[in-house]
Length: 236
Length: 400
Image (tube, each protein chain N blue to C red):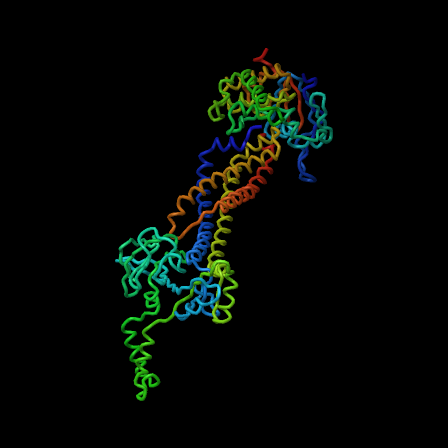
């Protein structure tokens, strides 16, 4: 149980220096509670990807504060020495394309994360299988990624994001390549998993089909976020 | 933790196996080159072993009879036989030439030996068919590598010889198979002139007033007779009596007979250190170039394979894979490729080595050295790909 999900306060990111400096984020505030799925939408160049990379601890913000659960991970500087371990244990990623490892079968694609964290192979595979069952793709556990449909691949990538029970999942356009039905199915799964595993999920999207499903939406424009209530249609 | 490298190899085994086979053929060539060098050294040692000699008595100030021409009178062996510690001594001649049989000819070393039984210095140690030379003329014992068969007639210069025996692994230091013929015939073959040349030489001698003096009627005949025989041999092979040290036996021969004498160790040094030294350097250069080419190929293949996995590597890094795990994966793949290549190379070299016209000796020690070399080369070759992989930004996995 994660007490506070993720909280971002006054997050800034500046690229470059001097006259050529560009402020991609100009003081972003955001909070996502455990079990909640929020949308992050905005036009191209608004700073969505920069925000996602800062949240994913792959680029360093210039200033601000980020708290994950009870832990302050950034406060005008990283507070966690091992960002790789932070990404592995505390943050789940779902990408636009599933980006499954093509030479690992489905179960090992999911089990890889706990294995990387030092868990025994058998235990890691058990955890992976539980999630695959929850996501209704357990019957494809021994299949290779290339043998799966697009929807199945995306469900496997969701299982991979969840397997280490991270307090937050960052989903970057997870429904972009899918048709309406499958896109809504993915959002339904994300909501279900968020509730089941008490995970805060941020979904970056342009997808008009799924925007009405969010209860809360953060609009990002010119490096600043603005919170709006969403319709939360499909999941009431 | 599962083996990422192993899974990747299993997933794209076709690519790895075919690349490994290509690399293996290159490694096979490398091992064969080493085998060619070993074969040359072995041929040199076999030449010395098969001569059955402890000492080689040759012309003073020469490295004969294998590395330099050497010429001794054919009666020298008698005086050597009387030297302390000498058990047996025998004349021998060597001449590398084309030996004809019917329509074909074979490059061979023609060895002139005194007819006798096995154990005599210079005689072929054992036969695989037929018998030793027993007559003083027109019999030959040939190495099977010449392709001659028992009973066949071969032609050396103007004379024909019957093949009465076959032997094996009797080769020159250059790898040419040997043909043994009686010493007298070999002496004749070495210096035999054609009839026109003999007639011309006689005319010239007769026209020379120094040899055709009216007051000395027998002189011209004596000179002409001396011109028509060849009293020279290339070396005297000596076997020392049991209990005698070859070097101690050699000393008085050098001192009192004023001849050059080499022991087995010295002769081996001449053959390996001087006669085949240039060829060895040549092969060494080939080995170095082949090693560089192999390294370049492995580096290129692993680098290309790694570049093809940039997105997967970015994802692996994003989800928390350690750099050393990724580096290990790439290095293991390079080593895997090396392993496949080595196995294919070793098998290929073993299969094609006997087809080579000269002896190719594949030694287990060289194979082990090659195995270690392949692994070192593959490990070094993977460095480029590892550098590329470690430079991959995990942010590449996230769009934008």
